[in-house]
Length: 127
Image 1: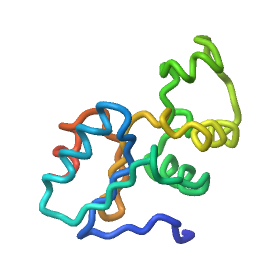
Image 2 (image 1 turned 120 degrees about the vertical axis):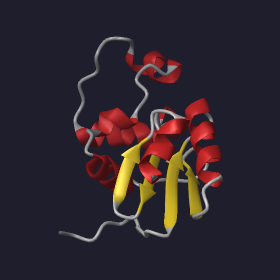
Image 3 (image 1 turned 180 degrees about the vertical axis):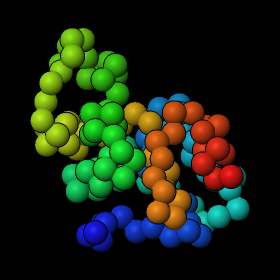
């Protein structure tokens, strides 16, 4: 299997989150309270590459669209409310241009990648 571009380490927790949404803020607070070393990557301030987004989606086991909040007002303004059918590379372009559409934080601990739907999800994955 090819080496991923995202470094993994069992002694470190990496959190990809969006500080502009409440789930991102909650999860970041939870992660900070852990006794492990934490690397917080706020996608609203730090550029995440298409390759990284692809790897995150792949490791979590979800399509790229599931990284995107299609109910966000900015998304609806641009694409409308009806189901949008795009190729993976088009979804990558959307999240690249509009990182604030990044929906649920992704926590990486060791080799495990998990999408967090709430702050308390974080505890579940670390136990």
